[in-house]
Each structure stands twice: as C-alpha cells, then as structure tokens.
Length: 298
Image (cartoon, rainbow, N blue to C red; front, side, top):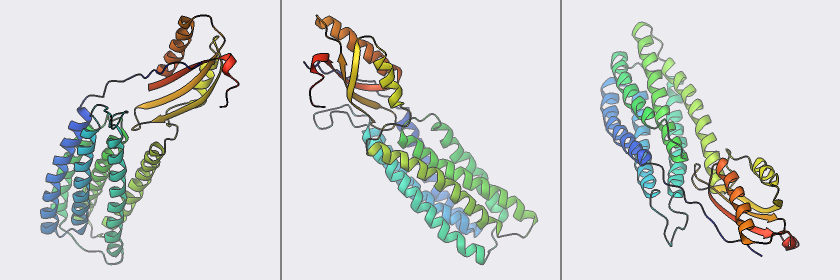
C-alpha cells in the first residue's frame, strides 16, 4: 500500500535579495566608469586592472540580478519546483567570472614585479577611500544573503573592498617611501585569498547542481530521528537535495507497523514531517508503507 504524496510549499524569501543585488549592480557599474577615469589620470595599472575586473563584475552582477528576479517566479507546468535554480545559475556564472577576472589581474601583476612602475600615490589614496565606501556599502547590503547567488555576489564585492584597502595602504606607504613593488605584492596576496574562497563556493555550487546532500543537512541524524519513532519500522529510498543552496527538498519512504485505520497512518506521517521541518527541509514528499510491503524490491 502506497501513501499519498505531500509537499510542503515554503513562502519565498522577501524580495530583499533581488533589491540588494540591484543596488550592488548599479553601484558597481557607476564606480567602474569612475575607476577607468581615475586609473588614466593616476597612471595606476592596478586601478585600471581593477576597473576591467569590475566591468566584468558589473556584467555578472547584472546577470545575477536578472536571474535572482527570475528565481522569485512561482512554480508552473514548466518548472514544477519553481524557478529557484535560476539564482544558482547566477552563482555559477559569477564565480567563473571571478576566477577569470583574478587571472586577468594576475597577468597584469607579474610584469609589475619585474619592472615596478610609479603611480600617483595621492590620487590612489582618494580613489581607494571612495572604493572602500562604495563597495563596503554593497557588502553590508548583502551581508544577510542566504542563497549561493547572494553569497557569490558578496564575494565579488568583498574582493573589491580588500583590493581597495590594499590600494589605500600602498598609497600611504608610497607617499613616504619609494617602494612601488608593494602594489603587485599585495595584489598577489589578494588574488590568492579571493580564489581560495571563490573556489570553495564554486565547489558548493557544483554540489547543489549535482544534487548532492546539502552541507547543512545531517542525513544520518534525520534517519536516526525518524527510526526512533515507535510507529516506524524502517526507511528507504531517502533522497535529499537543495534547489538553490537555501531551499532543501527530501523524498522518503517510511515503513510503519501494520495499522488498522488511515488516521493512524496519517498520524505517523505527521510526526515524520515534524522531524523534517526541524531539519530545515522545506519541501518534503513522504510515502508511508505498511510493514507487509517491506518485501517490495527497493
């Protein structure tokens, strides 16, 4: 005997994520134009390289904004789970752009190690202050993001903040000491730090794409908790995955001791569902089977 299908529909998060990415996009695009002008007048390759990188950031942020907005659409006959995975696609593209952008900066940095060049330290100083304020504000706006897309966009902006902090420090040093090689050395440190975190987030993104068990879900603990119920004899065909790194889905077959009425079966299902809710499973499909069915091929 097969139980009927139940799915818990969770309400969408507020539109804050889309609004925050929108703000980050326009701030980043405006500041990118500002950077190109500033890099030209200060003769700073570091600022020009960052401007090119930020141009790529702006394009990926715009795409992330569009995909995040798309992910808020309700489910339909074409996408029965809704459009949440569109934001995941944005996270993947954003991460790849970050890797490519970091590679571009690395290419620009290596020649500076061999042949250091002088730049306008005072101009770098003032541009760094504006850069820290603009990108820092965007990071704060996205600080509470839960989806992988928001996290990846936040790393975009954190990378920029760190870069501008480095420019700020170097500009102060260059005002008093003639050590132009500090700029490329700090760039290498920043690139290494950013790539480490971006690759870590990309691995998590690929895990979600491949429908792996979410990192915040203790698969074995859930099974153990369900098996502790007096009504439950065993469980099988347990599958858990995430739609976008924040909304988790689970399907499970629960074998219970033979019961006399359907109300007893529904009671057992309700207790299982309560456990899943405690473990942040937002969408669940629970099929109840009687113990006499346990011989069915799994």
